[in-house]
Length: 496
Image 1 (cartoon, rainbow, N blue to C red):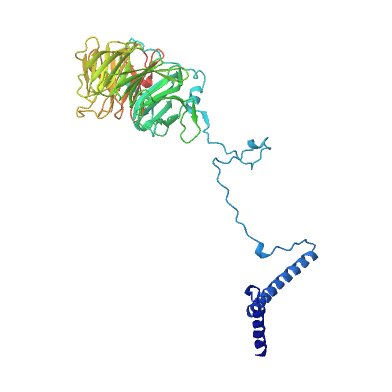
Image 2 (image 1 turned 90 degrees about the horizontal axis):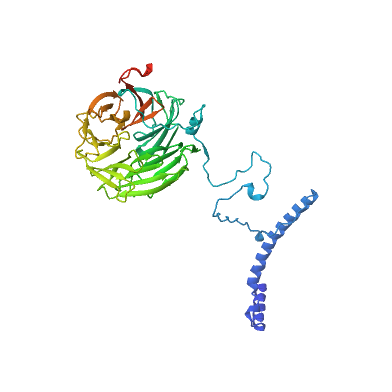
């Protein structure tokens, strides 16, 4: 008690002598502070002693040691994530001067993605073997001393699982028994096949050398460029004409060939039909116009003319006559129009067809400049003589099943045998039919096995002839003639 009373008196005396409170010490607080300071000093003294002992121990081991900074001064910094670059980082050694010697673990250059282009299977097939690398174009249709009386199915069928329905077909010949066949159709797929020398699958069919999706819509036409079968022209329902370089293909999952030229401005709507005369290409469109383009030797397309105003609806068929300036077209309005591309008003003849439905196809007989063949959805074919076209020259019936009525699919007949015969497929029969133009009579029918969409003849050499039919697959036929002086190989004998 005595010491406490003495401390209180000392505090009062200090307050009297030193009226400034900021300079007056509070004995009680100061006592507590000294007690806390002594406690802290003891901890710090022990810590520093421990550090000293550790330092002495390290020095005895011969290891330099620097006392660490006080704990309060040590901060653990979290590294900042660098901003992402605006372009992919390049680790290519080409950016760092001469490259070091190659090693197995060297980083690969991070280059922009580029698709490698390699020689295509079509090109390798065309160059395989002697005397097969040069194109042998089919000559103009020659006149045989014996007429065709039937067909014989020969060779293997061609089938592409991706191309389930074929609407167009073309072929070119590289040499005896060596040819290329191109097909296009449903879902925009295009296929190119080879003849002899390609593998035959277990089901007896040949698979394509090349197959790719060439359009977002269905393909309406495929054509090999004359004098250069490594360029393939396609047209489609999206209004595009594309020239493909089938000599090459991309080394990727699609194996698509490079595009040489793509024309998209000739028509404002889909292309329904296409035909070729030398280097000229005619296209019929749903926009009620016919386009004429020129295909240059390098594959470039030059639009020369667009003809319109002569139909009131979509134009579905077009073909050249025996001259590059003569064309015939047909449309959904039931009209057949004869065009002269040299004239300012090219439509010279309008034929109002006697088909019961809109027209789908028209073909001009190039061996007889006056004959036209038309097909529609009704079960008949009509022949017209443009010298007297008020009524059809004749009507051909019997190739479509009598119970079919209106045909649900578009089919394309063709003149053969110098324009004296017509070959066609027909809905509901699964057959190929042969008509005589002169007699307007059904001569024979042969079994295909399914309802095909088109018939297309190709002649090469002096006495060889192939008839192609196409639908879900492509079949080959050879003609049978009634002249015994023409030797028919044993495997082709027998009328189908």
